[in-house]
Length: 350
Image (cartoon, rainbow, N blue to C red; front, side, top):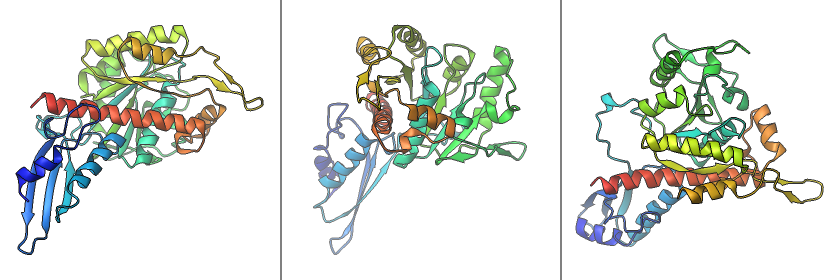
């Protein structure tokens, strides 16, 4: 079998999101066939896949293996997105995807969503970091019971880990209960320093928990970091949706992809009567996604277990039950949509 025959077989593998085969889309970046004299050998295929452990990209890889299964060759796959920038010019050279979790207003469960997305991606097998960029109200260390503080040699900061996720937060750098009272330039400086001076290492995903609204922190991150995309968190009621639209427009003005809308507090199932009550209304997040032609990532019910997990430091996504399943759906959709962004970028940039 030669390279042309391998590519002919791979032309039968479809990308479920981009609507064409992976060869036509330019997602097969290299094929090497190494046949030995007795017929045994190896075929090495490089794929432009950019969202490790996303279900869709894992399925593509499996279909590639299946397409070559009867070729009497060992199949070796590698996956990466070609980067136009030199590693020395990149802000986070070891990080494949930076994903912002944002909301137009406070109180909609944005930090809860960020923590569960990060822990869920880690549970899938990905290498994950979580940056608590809410300078004025950092809650992530409490939500994951992060008692260990970062270590430093005076030049770089080594982040602690919880649930396989590397953590950084302003909360690590202040006294307990101390308020952060800074003007915009100081916020810009500390965010930039924490991002660049932390030893994140090699990460598949860095989740950024942004503060609510559209202020200095968001602007710093949008202007500094190469975001793969953003997740907008809302609740079903109109007030939250109005503010979520402002967040959407902020990312639109900075040409940042929105991976989708995630809805918190999407109804409450009574543990006593079993009835389902839509306390904050219904369909708000899904309607917002449809109105702006964006994916709806999923809805998470109003569940006391979410509050308990946030207070006790155990992300709900790592447990069992309806709410955990709802978070897992969102995690998989975030990873899948990050992959779409990366693969589309390769295909359109050929």
